[in-house]
Length: 209
Image (cartoon, rainbow, N blue to C red; front, side, top):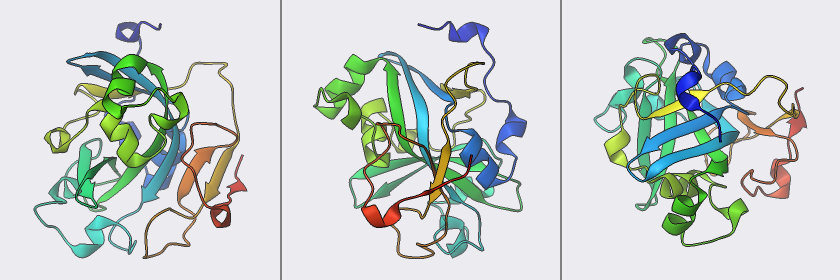
């Protein structure tokens, strides 16, 4: 178990980079949530980039509304929305104030607090705890109350990978579960990682690194 109090999370400037850069560089990083039920830690293994108003699949392409207002504020904020009326999705705002964009977390590798995650998910299948946007939110207890929180100073923070950690190739492919700009290669994941969400064969990715 690592001592997170002695480690430095990503600073504000990290999230102010271009969205695709943040989406790629978050892979392998640690998501640490100081929750009421104890520390929950997971490794980011899959992300998607939503790059702003010029991206038809990005929520900011619809203009500023009450539900997506967080996207039009500073980078490094939690943006949570509901899909299918029942599943929450966890995003981090990125880029500049003039480019309302975000990175969606698609899958995590559970590391600490696994018992809490399993209880919330109702399963002991480790690979199934956080292998999808809705699953990871359920496992971590994330809902709309998290909307707008800072990932720099708030209870959920992200830490760079350890030096010398296993370096898997980054794969890229089309985003999943959308109808607009569905062929844009803005989904990133760690090659061969068993915790990546299940993806149809037609979404097989290409190696970037």
